Amino acid sequence: MTDMGSARYTELGAFLRSRRARIRPADVGLPHGPRRRVPGLRRDEVAQLAGASVDYYNELERGAGSQPSEQMLAALSRALRLTADERDYLYHLADRPVPASGGPASHVHPGMLDLLTRMTSTPAQVITDLHVTLVQNPLAVALLGDQSGLRGARASFVYRWFTEPEARQLYPESDHAHQSRAFVADLRAAAARRDARDTEAASMIASLCDSSAEFAALWDDHDVAFRRNDRKRLLHAALGLVEVDCLNLFSEDGRQRLLWFTPAVGTDSAGLLDLLSVVGTQTVHP
Image (cartoon, one colour):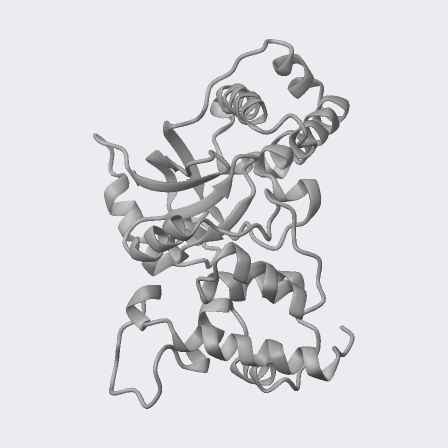
């Protein structure tokens, strides 16, 4: 990364400090802890929330570091609960292009991020209407794997489903045909809901039609249906088959969804989901 201009970098550090000072620990799901000498969050808490080292975040606030990556700026925006305007300003200070809506660095709907923070006992994540994962809680990572850090079309799970065979290992093979049809119907509904000038969905659909005969055939069926409440059977490396109900909360514009997973009634999945916090993200084979 290249060094930034000193004046702009100093302003970036001051902006981060000002945003950090206004947030209470409870706002981001952290315990208040012992008496605090400063208002708001501590630097180490912001670093923890953003997945950065404390030393790196300290350098950012001092204006002594290097240019933050777009991924780090997205993580800081979420950790500090920035509004859309504040997020854009942060990217401007870091001399990075503001990411387009729908990509992996999209601004997470504040209400959904707040709800996600409060969901500490169930797997949950926020995705876009094109199935790009924006943020996951630890239990969602343990259940589904870390789906962050992907770029371009591959950031969409739907795209990976039809172009990368390993993406389907999350589901039993007998469920693949149903999942394929549901994904395509949901994508058609999402694309129709977008502005006619939006080319992101159209570009992904065209690419999938060219690269996947299965997708092209299903697309020609013209099925359309949002995925709202699904019963899913998931294959976990340590826990085996886990049956869950996947519930959805849509943002007002339909561009983002909060998903959370509850044990399917009549199965032993409640006990299995309780084990997620113990198993964590380690890969353990039964």
